[in-house]
Length: 184
Image (tube, rainbow, N blue to C red; front, top):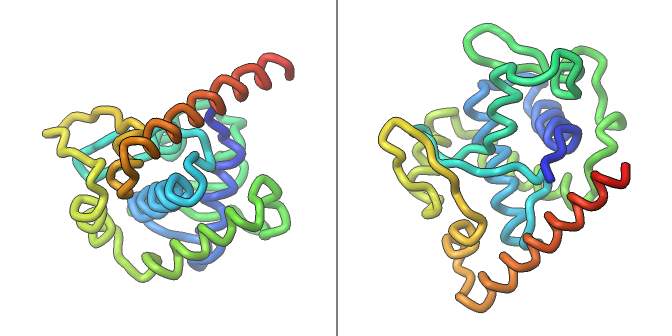
């Protein structure tokens, strides 16, 4: 299940590591690459977001909506992240790493790895990289369409048996998340 708090803390962490500001498209790509790495390492998403192929590469769908301002004005995203000129976003002043309590140490390590590996790249270098290196992305010809978890697992080199087990695990986690949400 999608967690706005988690994805907001993921974005805030990446912004903290990048002088508190970056282009939207770069943040979207770094977040996607972090989720992809989580899929490879744990077989599941950190944020619970859905993935889509868009003209500029793979994107986390609900995160993209948050970034575009769709949603509640009093959202967690709006409380930590603000729009800037030239399609940039920044972390609101006084936000510190201690506030990002939705992230585990292992999730922070993934985000650190993403910044270390890809943080030096410009936004459209990352677009080109995801086009070339993320085989789950298919050109939607100006539109968008879903990327299923099994496509990500296959692109990561998992065999058919591993893909089946990981997809089943994801379905079970989603069902448990739905039950937890009902109990809140």
